[in-house]
Structure formats: structure tokens, C-alpha cells
Length: 142
Image 1 (spheres, rainbow, N blue to C red):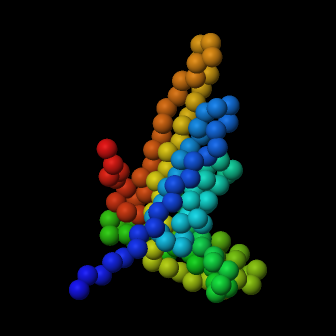
Image 2 (image 1 turned 120 degrees about the horizontal axis):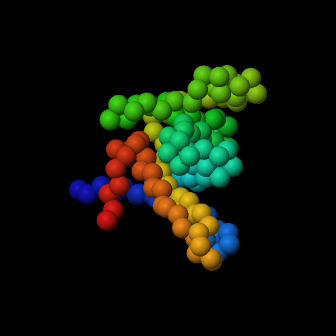
């Protein structure tokens, strides 16, 4: 007997501004992918967090049905612990949310293009790539 598992993944490119791509994020994690990738993007592009901190931040998931807010509370096989801070959990509970800690979530990969103006019309910069330590923290591509 063979058991097949479905693996879901998602890649999102940030729309170019001034014809320059700003970033790309991808994730695995089934039904939690959209929430996880959105949190990484908001952490970087709205909250101003650096790419690594954007990926390392604990994540929250809410599917609306059931009406439960799930939050990361787990230690990876590599010893990294991810947990939503107690003060954030208390804030959500005060607002009437039911909370559930989960041992798992999305695994995100994030690439940001950091461009600076150079001579003439040329732009110079660097690519910053982050591989999520929730799954070893090492890129597996070439």
C-alpha cells in the first residue's frame, strides 16, 4: 500500500515599483500558507522588520471556522522555539478570542531585493535571502 500526502506550497512576488521587483516569499504549510506568507510580508514591508526577523517572528493563524485563533508554540527538531508572546496572547483573550497553541505552521522562504541609486540610471543593490529555521534554515535549491 502506498500512502500519498499532498504537499501545498505558495509563492508570491511583490509587484514591482519603478520596474524593480521588491521581494518574493514562498511557503509550505497547507491551509496556513496564505496567513504565514502575509505575516512575513507585513512584518517586512509594513512594520519595517529586517528580512530575518520577518521570518523568525511567531505566527498567528485564523481560519474563521472554527472561531479559534491558533498560534505557534513549538520547538523544532533543531532546538529553535517559536511562541507568540504571553502579552499578545493576553491581549487577544481580553478581546474575546479563543486561543490554541499549535506545534507547527508555515515554513517560509523570503528574498528581498535591496536597491540603491548608483551612477546615472543604474541601480545597485543586493539580494537578501532567508530560509526559515523552522525547517532547518538551510536552502535546498541550487
